[in-house]
Length: 311
Image 1 (cartoon, rainbow, N blue to C red):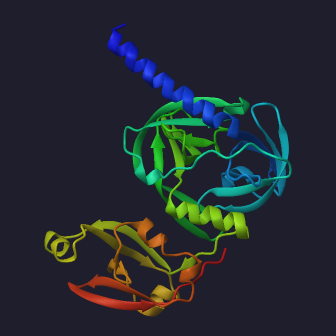
Image 2: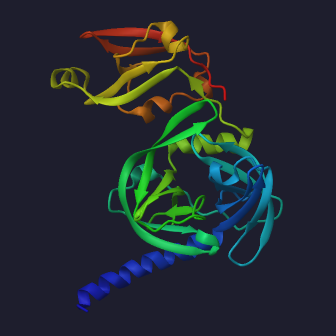
Image 3: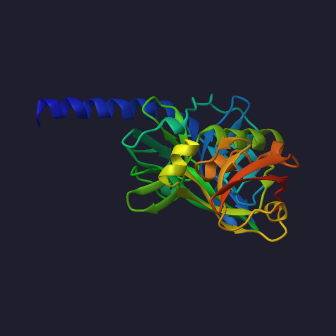
């Protein structure tokens, strides 16, 4: 092997080894039993108070279970909050757990960045795989009873993921958790829920309140490019086109229509679905918000009062 190739391989191995040593002791295998039977996955230590972070689909409707760390330590866990619309859940251990790892910001990841997945695929505790970020900004549909939304900015990686990896850590090259592994979409195609500003709000709400309160407008939207003259006029290249409006929803009652192009909320540009969803948390419920739309070539301001999203 060429000495330069050997040197590059050694550097790659050193990074993966270091990240694995940092994260593996802090990722547990999880077993729970709900109405649908037993479920298994992984979880990552979230706080020094005994909280662990996992996927909502791992815990399902279970109330409690067992988490086992790589050194054989078992702790009993209670599910304190789950949010199927982000596929995140927080559990709390009744016994002491290892200190939490550092958490990073997935919004800083670049395509090609090295990532390391740690979990318990197929029941094999403490398994580590490495790869790169294949794409960022992916969307993953999520549903909770009558409600549905898109999990935005999902991380796509070619690090091998298998059943049991769900709820495990996706770490960056510095050993910071930047995602929670959530799905296997195909060979060489794994997906992870990002750790970013939006999901940090969700995680904190689950940890403190056991649930996430969301505001509801009643809009179905999709990103759309703006015409060059409008892009120059508004300073943004993309916006959200209204594909549908739910009957009798706040959006419908305010006069928003299918075919409107949403440019901004309260003067803040909206470029994608996440920029809208970031606004739809508890503090928006019952608040008057001004939505600027493009309709038949004219700019129109519409005032809407979101209501609380109910399951």
